Amino acid sequence: QVQLVESGGGSVQPGESLRLSCAASRTIFNIGAMGWYRQAPGKQRELVAFITDSGRTNYVESVKDRFTISGDGVQNTVYLQMNSLRPEDTAVYYCYAVRNGLLSWGQGTQVTVSS
Image 1 (tube, one colour):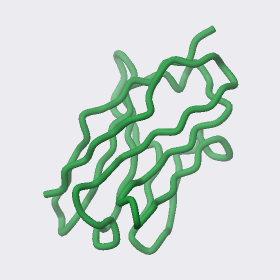
Image 2 (image 1 turned 90 degrees about the vertical axis):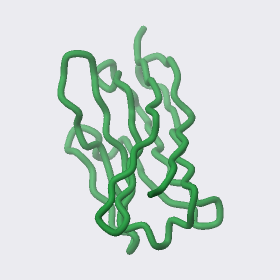
Image 3 (image 1 turned 180 degrees about the horizontal axis):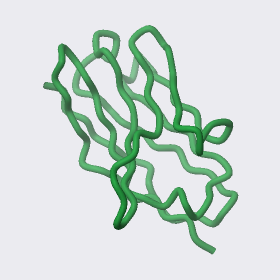
């Protein structure tokens, strides 16, 4: 199993940016996929973005052109750069990793977008 530690959440105003980090306990090169889910109060958990070990990325429609996911193999960290944040992006963001069919989760980090 992979241990994941998230950081970078916080409170911002609409239009501002945040970068979330997810540090893995092992090299990310042999992790099949890593990404981010989010869960807003009263809503189901939603897949936001993921990146595969081949570098392929995918995003939920609502964050395309605003969010960018990337990986750093030296730091064993995956990042989610979030620009032009909106109030509807407010949620707890969870990092996940899939390796050999096993799913691991981070502890979650709160993102609040409010004026």
